[in-house]
Picture 1 (cartoon, rainbow over the protein chains, first blue to last red):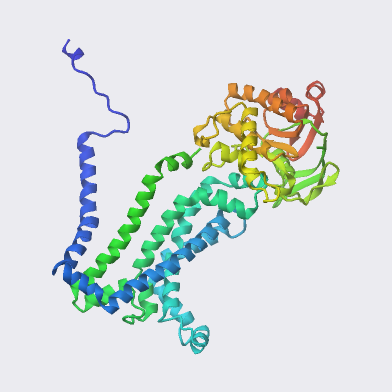
Picture 2: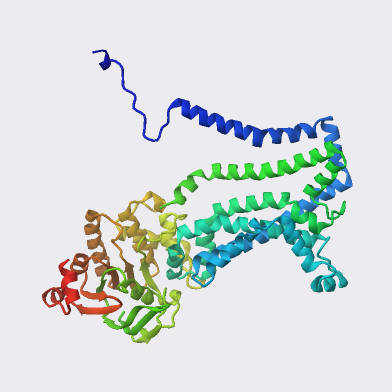
Length: 288
Length: 239
């Protein structure tokens, strides 16, 4: 009767054996370390190779300052615009029925499938000095290519899908009933949007905006083509990093890279902090 | 308020959701639009509420042509099938929504809104749930909150799309009486959509049986039971 004394352990249907579990967790940890953490640490280690002073000094010169300012300015212009366009596109696609909807969704995804370099070339072709529009604009003192507008356009093109992509599935899942309810209660379309639609999508919107921001600050290919890489004028942070690296100024290159990484990490931390702070609300509003 | 539906038809692309249908709803009646899915009953309800516009025909409210009125101008208290409560607002804010949405000139002061919401919560016999979120309510409670929210705008009529569809049998029976009571106290002309013939027969003063976008029969529950006008009605009500 020794069986009666040993308690029987049941394993839940979705639980794996310990060995399998540890193997999978370990595999994940190794993958994360090699692909994510190690490069991250390497960037900071390389930046600080000659000490704090050298790293900070390399960021202090005029060109570095200009690159940081330019990148922040571009993100400050491109991200709000793309957020607005993304909301408009997602709203239009999910709340209305019309012909060619599938085509429009494909079009929104286009920047994901087109190489950024090609996108940059398209902008040069359209707005360059040799083009009809570009020639006229340059003649009137509004150059697009090799100037801020071109870089903003290129960045917006590349980051366009992020907000809309986040919003469309959420808005499809939520349906139109709440908006219709607001309308029957006498709210105008505008009021319905601000009081019902927007609060319902705010987390997806925030996530989309953060992704969009991270990518806008980090975009290289398209910007490289349209900016002309003019030091101190049109060179963004990623462009400057590449130029410094090519000149074997590795402390300067990695210091700038570290700043770019910190900017990205700050956005992620911001998102996590917001999620933690509003966890109860998130849980309450996520589903009926 | 007396509602008249005059030769209303509705096309969705090439399919006809409603063939020309006509119907007069006397003021203060409790009417069921009864039919299987695809019979056009919800489309008709949404046309009354201004959420859908007819391809042809007219809607008259109290003798006045209301066909061109926007959804906001209709002032119809609409209860949606899955209630469509605003998930990011508390029950109190949900019920107050319609009053807060009014233009400044006709918007009641804050204290008055609070008083009315409290009164409506009492009417639906849930006085203590104002601070909760919809996700924290049971199905039956949600339905009653949706009803209170619709009543808050002092509607000219009450329109309900499958108001009992998402509830289990026991709650359904209780809430039927709840709707009847609210109808009797407010005296509002009430139209509800259902596919459940027992529900329609038990609750409504007048039943409109629909099939394939046509009205098959209009009458008192007892008359429809006693004298079904078509084969469809006979088989549908015996189901």
